[in-house]
Length: 294
Image 1 (cartoon, helix red, strand yellow):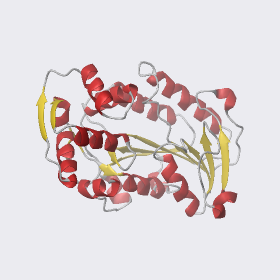
Image 2: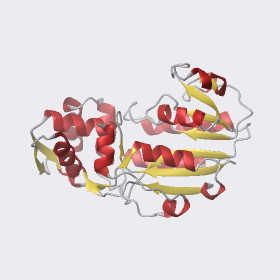
Image 3: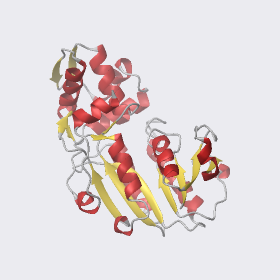
């Protein structure tokens, strides 16, 4: 198959890229930097690099011969006040890019959430889902809980907080529940749904087998590292102060910290288990995912 991979140099895209090549697909890798992905020589004939910025419509190439497209572009670390507008612009340009192609399926990695009081981050994800549904292509939306893997923003925050702070006076959103999933399992599902009619026009929720609070995840990391840590949650840290707390202690930038704090206040637990019926798979436990990341 001929597959457009947007966000090819991002955290998920860069790991999905070699898996698509190994499966025999020809990948059109779209990145802002162009040829910044290393590939074995045996796969070079299976790759077409596209240097373009989805926020700049004039930079987009003309494409006509494609079978499927992955939309893995997010703007969480861009302008925190306008990232929703940036995501909408990026998505609309993506739809323009593929409108004259033969794309039969669009696969979008979204965020898993519960409730109606959503953060700007989650509201933007829902808006992008609706925009993608306006395409004539079949849509597969995968809503994922917190992703655990070496290099993921969630893992880096957990690592930095536990490694640097023996005692934490932390915001109460550390008691929010989520269903963390290993990056290897996210990649498994992204590959499995490709060109599968049973996944067409579906919204599928994914998470690992364990439901944990962020506080429990921090303490599990400490146990795996053989570290003694104490965490006291308090109600007085505002989202803005919490963002600074993450920014100064961890390596994430302030824009990303702000988006993550807003998102971590919303529960992220799988409610619909349809994906297990369609694509049976035993995901790694949280401890297994954390050991893999370490």
